[in-house]
Picture 1: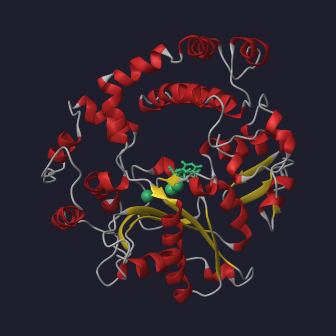
Picture 2: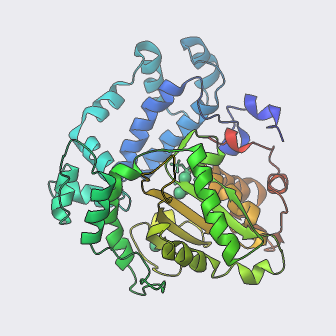
Length: 405
Ligand code: TTP
Ligand code: MN
Ligand code: MN
Ligand code: MN
């Protein structure tokens, strides 16, 4: 179904869900400069400021022409989501092709270290600032802190066989005992996910091409079909928004039988993860719902669906004798939650945030990945397609590839 034509000209609209936002926009350079400032505020824990930048960037991402002094004056100066400070920065960009503060931020030691630390799985802005406050600046500092043997050549990533060796030495808890029983020690796995993230950083930093995303999906679904026939699934996340390269693979899984699915889905997350672990496909479990309740990644667990956030490694093949570790997120939804789960996990983060806001403020409804309900009487909607979710919310259809806000 094609994206509703009206949303291409709706760049001034208040909510991101009313606008088309392509992967690459005509003002991508400006969006990138402002993203540095947004990221900086996030790293510093200034979430309100970060959100203000995110909103401004959102407008720019859906603006269909190159911004000049003239179009800036005629189109953008009156928008409430572009405050005075942001407008000054946009003008700087029009004049000079860069934003002074963004360049200064990029050059600062603090921004560089905080970005580096948060690029590691399991380290968020708060922990990164703590480490910085303790005087740490580099990956080598983190390796010393966590007692991880340093890379043989600090200039180069560890070769895959060295990575495997170091991981063994770390006595990493994968979340399961060797015979596939979940380890009950709450929080233990999340503590351990940081050193795993450090050792695997170089591998996890490598972006995943679409063909490999699909290959990983096929392998996961093959195991799933053996365990539980009749499941349905969609690759969501950046892949579904059309990104040529992804940071991880996100798959929403449900069951084709609407009635039986209610009994089949609960617990399937653990069963499949254990199966993948036994087969050596999943090497680490960073988070498993119901397994450890509290950890540093709390903010990320923004819904109550069963999910496994894992590290995955494809078996070697003829064309690819050496495989590297990849991040795979498996999300399980009851049939009645499938389409809201697919929408929520397709993102972008901003798109799904504004979907919740739109539902609440404009429609008196509650949207999340689990479902769609009317607030005043708690009536639950049971959408049978993705389009139906948009219809119920009174929104024009926007293709996933136009949700890159
Ligand atoms: P991610 O996998 O973190 O991001 P992504 O798939 O958009 O991009 P990539 O992996 O290539 O970096 O999250 C998947 C989707 O889940 C995301 O698009 C939106 C949703 N999501 C949220 O809405 N809030 C969150 O805090 C997270 C972590 C994800
Ligand atoms: Mn993703
Ligand atoms: Mn993910
Ligand atoms: Mn957790």
